Picture (cartoon, helix red, strand yellow):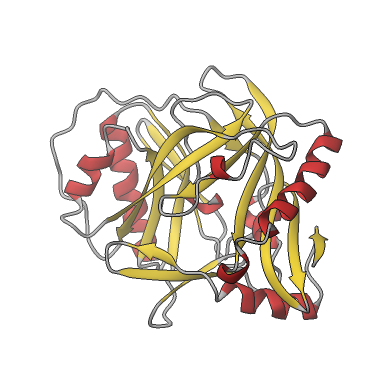
Length: 301
């Protein structure tokens, strides 16, 4: 088994092997559907959009059997302080090789680079239903990753509108959140800042670096409402209404955004969608970082 480390566009032979590798994986989409992911010919573009990135690949006889990305980022804490941290993501191994220490080899390759950089803090985001990060850490010189928080990932159907609902203004946005990079590197549209009274966010897509494909071969084309800031529940509600309308105007049938799973607006937003929105769960794991409410952009998961 050979471990590759990519920092730029892969050569054609690896790009072809990566395309075949990605077809091995499907992810849940609501209760009865699923999707696959394609990062395209430039597999590393998506990761480079978030910061200095390295993508580790496990190759066996010309076939890619595992992958892991490591990205240097910063995390701004709820108290306003910030520190450098490594984002470990896209960890996956084809099913028939999952008991052969492939992921261990990839993690150790990333570990060596992280230790050389001097970074002590690291985090990952794992969709519920996948293997939790804490099962892969705490051995081989790799610090234990503990669960730091849970996320609610919402996808709105932009062909529908949110119904007005009664809201309480007890709505706190104080969260730990990663930041940095160049999101426009992976967005097909030029990112757009949306603002309403008391709330703002950035609207973009990931289609130049990451596309989602449904079972029937159609693209799950969506925009992402990222970098959320809001002062009240009503301000957040009106911002999402505005983002849904703008996404529809731009021809995108879906809009993703995420909130901490315990946020009081998660279920009111689902109710306001009249059953047209879907909800998926994820957990943030990490080391040398605090527990609490985390805000992760869906365009970076």
